[in-house]
Image (cartoon, rainbow, N blue to C red; front, side, top):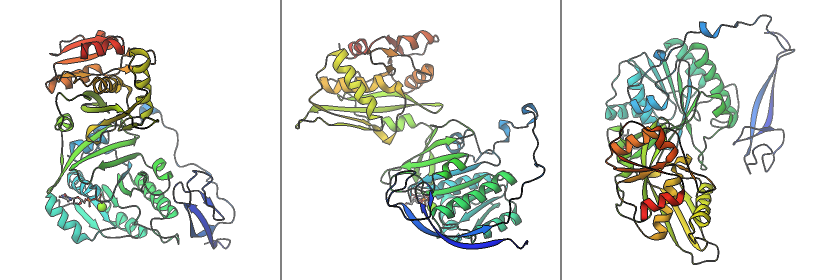
Length: 458
Ligand code: TYD
Ligand code: MG
């Protein structure tokens, strides 16, 4: 090597939330504002004398039309819910992060997927947390017995890269990114610099060799993936595996996807033989619905490309304190406030001294304005203490003037409601005009919030 290569040890403080580096300790990160997040790390600085500028770039411009890429290149795990969340299978060379609470089933999901991927090539599953014996026992329970599935219990990144070079797998799984470490850095495994460095080198591998790579990431108390925020920018796809540990249902959600739609969800049930797919989530989310109960209503929401019927509940009751409570779970509380204001001003309800709670059943999160009409109806139903007719669904966005606006994909929503035995759907007059084929369900077009409540409660 050349003589002016200097290695120097130095101490830096890096923010465990956003990765900011500072020469001195600070109580509050000036970048992301997190308190007490700066941790001391020792790094070895490699200094090269002078910068080397490549004389000739290795890649050259290509015409878009000449780039070969089709959807057929995608690789399937055979777990349909998983493939759909990825946008229709794994793209060669893609780099995916799966986050979730400990014990939610990330390792189980990836082991089951790995079993399916072996049909397309060799899979190297790096288990940096558990021994190969433990994984083998789990694989036995999951009935994964693939010949081309290799396990590697290794925490050193250099060791992993060496094995990848030798084995040349078609898929690589790293479980988890917080437990692998590189000898190039002195800081402890799981620290920001380690996670960033390891993820960076794995990304080069994924992109350079075209090996699709999945990394498991732990989640911090506040629900974000531990490690630098940068990790999320680095990867192509970020998936969250969510669910209540006391509940068998798990939701796999794409929050970032360079190769498909976000907000796509896959629903699974954790059984003693591993995760099984739930192809009909609407039935699941409606299973425990109390019929003829005031404040309960069903809305056809879109999750990615799929319509899902979800139960919305509202409770409106007189407050015992001067300041009424407004609580919303699974839905944006600002939208709920807006809808309460519309009910007051445009419909004439007196809600000022009422506590208001809105909840989406089944732990689903609804982010689209199409559920406005449903929330409004649930609030009205609870306030009037009158149940909504039990086979009725409704959807539509509500504006500040109390008008009901058209939303996207009305035909999919209506069809899903009809499939599950609902016989009446209240929607915006604008949406009604675009629906021409008979759907086997009575459609009622409305223009205003007040008009829709008239159909429900008169
Ligand atoms: P795991 O995949 O180890 O979670 P993570 O990798 O996200 O930490 O899942 C562990 C949990 O799943 C554990 O609490 C037991 C449960 N489980 C089952 O119920 N059935 C099964 O077949 C398996 C493998 C796990
Ligand atoms: Mg695990």
